[in-house]
Length: 96
Image (cartoon, rainbow, N blue to C red; front, top):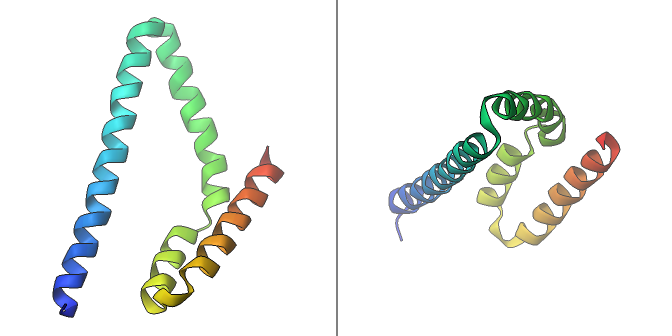
């Protein structure tokens, strides 16, 4: 497989995953807003943005780092995934 086809395939995969994630989040947000009403919708917004600050700290750019390093050395995928997962789990536990 040529490099350009591999790059296009990877771009398509990441784009599809991002669209699916955003779509599911949109559907659940609309559903919860309908069930909880206007005051509940404000509570959802507050909670989402409050948790967003903690997500920034837990992420630390590891998704970009992981993607880059796995693309460079695909044979070490287990090492990188385990390391990134461990760091995120530790940071999440610490912030919790």
